[in-house]
Length: 366
Image 1 (cartoon, rainbow, N blue to C red):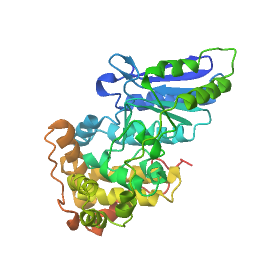
Image 2: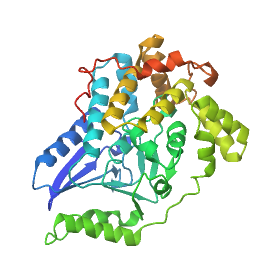
Image 3: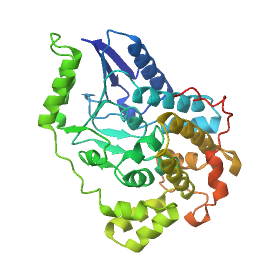
Image 4: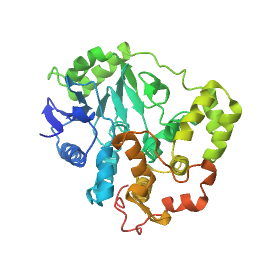
């Protein structure tokens, strides 16, 4: 059974992610099916817009996409499965395709929208969330970095909130995502089916007219932004060049929020906090294509950390996945264990491409 359901109705390409038992986590087949549908529709003059949603065990909506299939990452890395490299190359190409899609692309981001789910929604021309949306870039929790374009869209969040979200993996619930500029409208989930159907109802209207009607209706019914989480302390403590300085600022602040945030950072891989912060900072000044090329370089080193003599279970990423999703002991053994023990020599090689200029898997992205 396909985990991607596609249809074209009244000029609109409709996509439903249909892997509810895994919260629609993306596997390689899903990435390929999404890419094929979007590529075909891009050239099809009868398709004038695209809408994407998730599904849960009860039917449509309820969950969007929980990210990439990290259990596959774990087993594929240990087995040296070439599909692991193919997954990231093709996923990042899909992210680039969506961000540059020439037709309206509307994402109904209901339920969990994390990691890879952000990669297939942040490039949408209309990003719709609900009161039950849970948005996050939680990659540092598994010893990874905020990929799928995270180094491109997180720096566009207000102030230094992108660094805060990327390093901590904080979950924004419901209308909190509006304050981070990671969504355009929030609506009540009770009306999702009506809004979805309005894109294909009334063929007497053009697709553009139906989209304009949708904009108007949700604008009148939108939920108010929740911005209490976006406190001034974020800019005061995350405007530093290194994770150690950020953590020192949090320690000196001593507020309940700072203490809680510091405790979260202490659980993350010190090495990958360095990599993630540098990625986000560099991404502030990069095009999407260049940033995705950087991500492809970074993720290669995450699973094949040759400069530290680590592969498979010895890498931070595979160890992080083991602790979270395989053994579920939530006690990853990071190496090094302390933020103070991370050196420049450990971090710099992550940013050096293992490929030549003309060999990079994403060399042709523009």
